[in-house]
Amino acid sequence: MSFFDSIPQPPPPEPVRELRPAWARSDAVIPGSVPAEVMLIRTEQVAVAIGSVRAYPNGFEFTLQTRLRREDESGPGAADPTARHGRWRGVQGPDDVLRLGVLYADGRRTATTAGHPLLDDDTDDRRLVLLPGGGGGDARRWDGDFWVHPLPPDGPVTFVASWPKHGVAETRVELDGAAIREAAGRAVTLWPEEPEPEPGDAHAWRTQRITASKPAHRGATEARDQPGTGDPGTGG
Image (cartoon, rainbow, N blue to C red):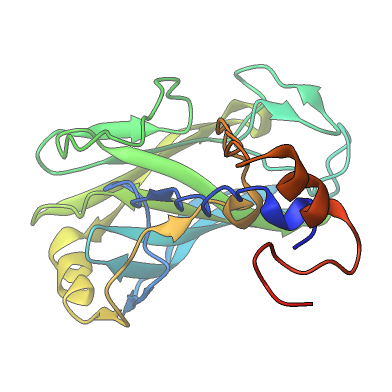
């Protein structure tokens, strides 16, 4: 046995697993589609629409579509028009951004301008969540996904928008909350969700005290360290 083979090895690290927050969209679900496209803003210079509504057991997702008649002179138009902090545009003023809000029939409401933090263990269904997803476009168009949690009650789901930069005051359109709930009932859960291991768990380090066993006598230790020498007590 070599010197390093005689050193006790630490046990493999236990994987760290986390559950998906109750308010987050599941990646293990094929959503039910809601046949709904509504025009939220339409002027001679700008248009904003809501479409591609997909319902999940714990919420729904939609695509916000924006179109400009001419290129935005303030910078590349591929930036999220609802974000105040853009890579190319810097910090936009409150009148520059497209403000988008959602209102449920029971009075719950939220908007892209909300600044309250959202914690992983937040399970309060009385709180309406509106989160941006992926998006992109070019100098005249931008499409982006938004996630809403939880599912709406029966009654209208009202989308509210304003874009003062383009002369658009507050405007509203409605979708049927019951239709969204009905589509959620058609969503297909592919498999039970399990917590995923954290990236790098397989190579995680763990602090451990290593205590070498005391050899029976000096000669035995020297014999084990000699190349080509068998274990003590074995025949040569």
